[in-house]
Image (cartoon, rainbow, N blue to C red; front, side, top):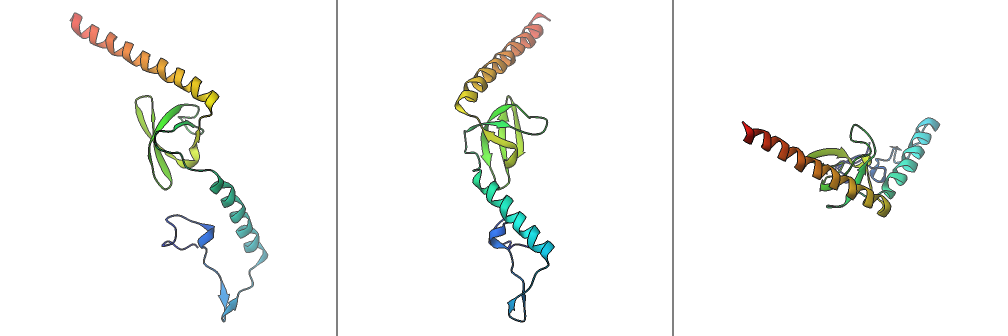
Length: 131
């Protein structure tokens, strides 16, 4: 268990310590191994910084995987990304920054999808005018 006042989510830096009669408690080897694994994976996750507002990101998992969008809101565990015309709420682990090479491709793809949306809008409004 970790302290809820020190961190809004589980954080190994704020783990409660076990004691017995005022001294450190001896922990079973399985618990010590799990704790070591948690600390190892938490360090790796902490190395990845959350995306910034306005940053171009790529979705890495789920139904939006492979699509790019712009970050509009960043929370403690989720962010909101504008993908085409949709505002999608995603876990922070599901997005990664787009590299400069990927940014050009993403920009071209975004331009193409915007052009399709404009064309579709004209086609729809034109059909309404003909009636």
